Image (cartoon, rainbow, N blue to C red; front, side, top):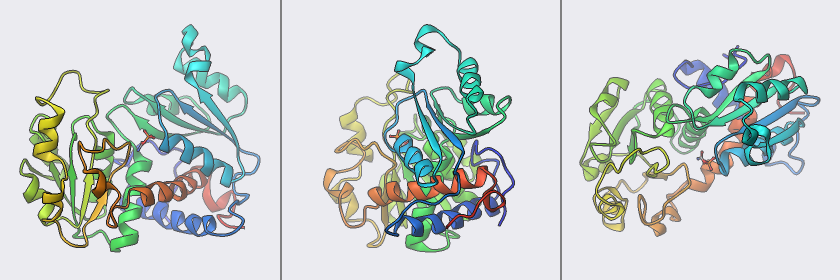
Length: 313
Ligand code: CP
């Protein structure tokens, strides 16, 4: 086991051993989730704050359930019902939550670096649940967990990530996790959204969707991040879909066992044909299920892991 961190802020700073420790721990917690009684006492007496300043469905609910499964007390911070709306700062809000003895802060924020900023002065643990276009570590971890379940060792696997790479924290975190575990990563999308500078992260960049998907063992489709684009980076959604969407004709060219992944939320008919999103090879909902186990593992480990509690009762 390789873990000695109080925070989980990104994937870039983790080594392969630490990533593997999270994945192995998540496998144990997934087994717990398949038992009739799905709760463990690992975080009994601890307080976890879901500190989401930007909207979320999957990540927020998954972290909430993960904390409850570990027997923690959970506070869901709702920005619209908070004094944020009266001008209270992020720092003051966090320090007030800490004054209530919160132990773990799960932070989603539209500004890159917000979780790192909070980690500088909070005494508790900070877990990044997505910051701007920078990092979404637990999404990448649940993605590699899902790939590992289907394909085994990631070394030498061909993974294509298609779509809006430039504005995507999911893409950046996946690139770090996949390359650290030895996968070959190909990025594809409009040149405005997939600049060649990403080659410096150890990826291949192509603007030919067929080339990207034909040799892929895994195809991860990303949505267009309208909320983070400052201007239109391509002429129209229709054109994007025509040139880069995974439609039936393109799907027929993929390997027969290629996994189809998407972090959600899906824009059906834009980056992926609706039937393909729901097909047998799609693991979109498995990703959500695995996210729960991965987030239980992360909360368990940042709380001190086996030094503080046992993963299973
Ligand atoms: N994949 C993901 O982060 O989804 P949410 O924005 O709904 O949390």
